[in-house]
Amino acid sequence: MVLDTRGVALDGLINFHKPTGITSAKALYKVRAITRQRKSGHTGTLDPMASGVLVLCLGRGTKLVERVMDQPKVYLAEARLDRISDTFDEDGETRPVAVESPPSAACVREVLASFEGVYEQVPPAFSAVKVGGTPAYKLARRRREVRLEPRPVRVYWVHLHDYEYPRLTVEVCCGRGTYVRALIRDWADRLGTGGCLTSLTRTRVGPFAIEEAWGLEDLEQQPDPEAWLIPLERARAMLRKPFVPPRPG
Image (cartoon, rainbow, N blue to C red; front, side, top):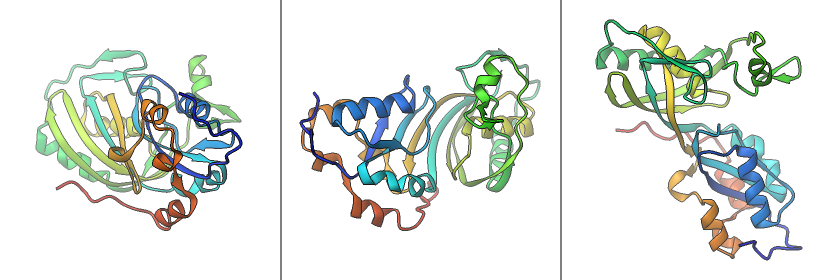
């Protein structure tokens, strides 16, 4: 259903649940078509393989893009320690890695905890980071050598949910600019194993939780924007300061 919002300016945010298989830009395009709002933007790219919270800004809500992007994010990630990939995830070319002595759960916890705080992270070559004005992933696809400089990122906390070699399930709360697939690469380097992201869900962006997110079908079936639009004043109040979700118990 296309909502009857012609001539109606919607100002605010949508806590949107991006499905896997599409880019963040494509998700925004679909929502724009449903809401008939031309002035819009999203607040932090999720790779096609990833799903979860993607905060969308409509109308004057686009002025809040930077505030949303500055909010801490929480991800639920699954990875394998017996594989590597040129993209650090299963969307790339993967190959197996032989690990003679798999790390213990205690060792994994210790390594994960050592990355909490601020550390220097090298972004993946297959990323949107610009190299001389060109996105790095375009150069990488042409088999060009891509050298990206490390940059400081913040990891607020890491929680190990499950580990049985080679599979790892973790929850990560991190700051702006952090690549979870690069974080897994860095853990793997420290552990002496492979490291390949197999699943990624963004469960929270600051105060915006996945439990309250609206999917495409939800928006299509709910014709009243008041149900899913977070008004501008309420959005500003929610974003007054960074919200760091507590570490799981």
